[in-house]
Length: 277
Length: 126
Length: 144
Ligand code: SF4
Ligand code: SF4
Ligand code: FES
Image (cartoon, rainbow over all chains, first blue to last red; front, side):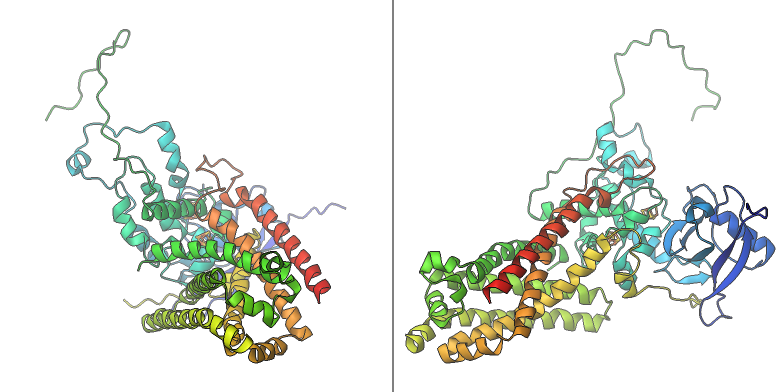
């Protein structure tokens, strides 16, 4: 006999209130499941119906901003990207991402990750400061060169990979999959000349040598960034560089202005709307 | 030395071990001594066989290489595990210095054994 | 302001735990355990075999000391550990130099990862290590 009542599940959320709680505790809330409901939707229901003080981070609710990484049923995932139905369990356990301090309830303190990320200079490093400050044209890059790093550039810095990594679990000094993958994203960008500078940090004891390809980061990454791949490619580059086997190319030059192309059939540019100067 | 160099050496040592330990295992368990030096493989740990190998320069050299590579590979692996347990800065120093000292001492001991064994084989085992 | 945040690092639990999503985590753990075991055996081995310097009597004494069935089983375990550590080590050396995990690709759902890409190799490693260990086992049993 089909059950006419709507299906409900238990949201078992991890609560921690700084200053009040000694340690985090679990709290159960019943939530009615509607079709297409995500874990994030469920948390909103819990907050509306029974736990108004429940705290978490979220923004875009579409897997873009990277705010809502949580430990859902034991696995780091994005709350907005995880359907309750897909979990298939009666009890949905939601905790903050492990390997980060808990600020409150489901809010992890991601600052250490971002500080490492910043230390690895995740932007184009080049000598032509003038061109960079006041660009004349774009830097030339072929579609093939783009593919060398495009996958890694999809990272939304959600920290799920850091929560899954066994090395990060014990070693707070280890740079971790997200910052390393982002360093590799720029090291393998044909427009970048920062390999030597990043190498100074990466050759040290907290660099990719702490990664042993347990592969967990890539298994949980919600964006298919595959940080484990980036880290192994990084090791190859660094070791080949040590053995003088790495081929070096100068960073891509500024693209030349097209010249001599016929402009037949292309209407003239409209008049300027902003005064010159 | 920085970890990039140490790690590369760790893998290099692993490669050496694969070759020389493979040889070592084959000799001790597959009877390759038989082909080379006329001693059946299942007798590889009999004194006659040991003494025979101890006299050979080839075995002395491969023993030294094997001891060095294995000590380095093993102790660097141990260091990896220990450092990933997040020891404090002082303990970190102790681990680095301690493992280096232990490694060098054992390497010296192993080398001495390989070089001193021929003497023992002739004077005592004769 | 002093942080009132609560520490939530998984600790050593994180080395063995997790792993609901891929068995490379277990290979990683096993690689560490076998590595530690092999190191312990090797250190012992250096001392036991160094008795050859003292001549045939000491050598024989040392060999007799490590000959019982307990040591036979122990030696076999060392051999099996070596088989696994060696074959898995070759896999790791290749992968950690960026081979066999494929080039960067466009992430299209459901995502293909480097872990999935090298999985056949990981399976092959287990099979090869298993075969070597089995063959070694027969050898150990029949030779003694
Ligand atoms: S690599 Fe993936 S899991 Fe890690 S922060 Fe980026 S998007 Fe998140
Ligand atoms: S592959 Fe490396 S970075 Fe990724 S989870 Fe494993 S050890 Fe951590
Ligand atoms: S809310 Fe933005 S990624 Fe989930």
